[in-house]
Amino acid sequence: MKEKLYKWIFTILAFASLIFLIGIVIVLFKEALPIFQKVKPLEFILGRAWYPTYSTPEFGILPLILASVWVTFGATLVCVPLGVGSALYLHELAGHKQRAILKPLIEILASIPSVVYGFFGMVILTSLLQNLFHLPTGLTALNASLVLGIMATPTVCSLADDALNYVPKSFREASFAVGANRWQTLTQVVIPAAGSGISTAIILGMSRAIGETMTVLMVAGGAAVIPHSFLEPVRPMTAAIAAEMGEAPMGGSHYHALFAIALILFLTTFIFNIIAEIISRRFRIKLGLSG
Amino acid sequence: MKKNIIQNLGFIALFLCILITLFFLGSIIYFITVRGFKVISWEFLTQGPRMGMTQGGIAPAIVGTFYLTLGAILFALPLGIACAIYLCEYSPKNFVVNLIRISINNLAGVPSVVFGLFGLAVFVKFFGFGVSILSGSLTLGILTLPLIISSAQEALSAVPQSIREASLSLGATRWETIKNIVLPTALPGILTGVILSIGRVAGETAPILFTATAFYTRGYPKSVFSEVMALPYHIYALMTEGIHPDKQTAIAYGCSLILLFMVLMISGVAIFIRQRQRSIYG
Image (cartoon, rainbow over all chains, first blue to last red; front, side, top):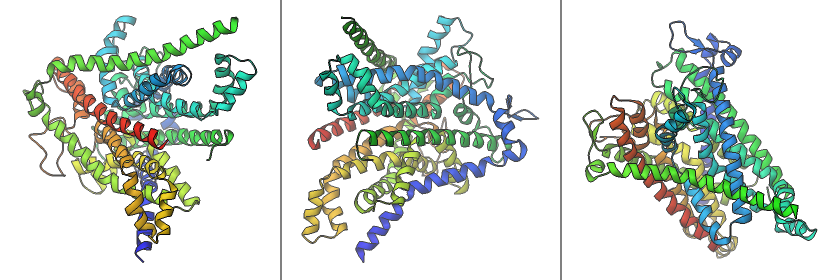
């Protein structure tokens, strides 16, 4: 009797994550849908003007979406070479002792809070970039890309390193046996074998960059215009939500529009995570690991 | 010959990658430590802000972050451990378990600002908790749930199957086995996960932006329904609000140093313990 009771308690509590996830989806839809009675979904997504506080407000979030895309793209350019390169270094070149220090160090660095990265971008990088490119302001898409990229690097590195470690030793030995040197083995055997694991790492890194809020809020500059260059200020979706929610009257159009942005953001990262999940499952099957 | 030159160039490139990474991360820590250290004093740590955020300390923000983190862990810990116990000890391998696993993974990937909006709509508005410690803690708790579940799961599955079987064969029931054998063995691993989540929760800003924080409160919070100041939000607010940017930046350096120091210490301890456990259990 008692046994069954405990089993039921654990079963019910185990559903908490599922309930919260469903709760988030319901809340986002419920609070976002009213805006689509005023603005058509397509106009909302493709509209080029974001003036939510004007007397005749305009809710077009294309500038915000493009800003997110640009900044995420820029961050990927930074975090992929640095993260994957560092992982390859850890895997191939670092000795046992070096690895024992570097691996935990990088994990610890992954825990630096995003607001600290944002602060660093504001006080150090901003003036550096401003002087370097002679800009009116240093708070730009470039600044946000750099900070986000550095921030995502430890995550990408840790995950890519795990993927590399899953590649069986026999693969390398077979490659050495046919006369390949270490570099050839690395680029032609180990990396392709770990390829889907590394792609998962990259996708999760990108997903983190898209959803990151505080850093872009602090360093991206905040101008809700369609970006033309990396040297202009931009306002990514997360920054728009965080910056404007405080002033948006509860239950008004602006409030609902911000929830709609959050919904789009949620769906985007949701798709990214599903893709990462599918790829990593295939990767494990390919290398003969349990699902 | 040529292939060895390529190999050397390649290896140099990889070395540069990790060097650049460590350089950037090192310089963040360097600048914040050097400039933050100048502001920190006993007064800075124990008093509230004075003179329109240009003098005084950040004590209420430290206290606020402590309350928020404590609340979040109190909420997420029982739920997370229960979920991990179900998945590791009771779960039949079926559709439902897969569904729970997938939802945990996806919950972990939800952007933090979306959690903030969820907290705003549900805890602040729907349940009427208002902008308060309670709303903020619950929001942070949900955010950290996946992290607690996955580390508890890792700890539970590291417990050798043979110990469970020995206990069951002596006539102990499933629950007795879990309570007396499995949980005590897995405890250090579970604690590591908890410490890691503390580090994560303490530094989160976006989820508490609209659910818990205020730039300035008079004195310390009086109940779970009070607004609070919090360290990470305080850094953001110092940099973007107020009327004395220069003096505020100096205080923000101090704030960042305290936050960075706290978070790095906390996660450093957790990662160190985990590293040792992994090498013991292989």
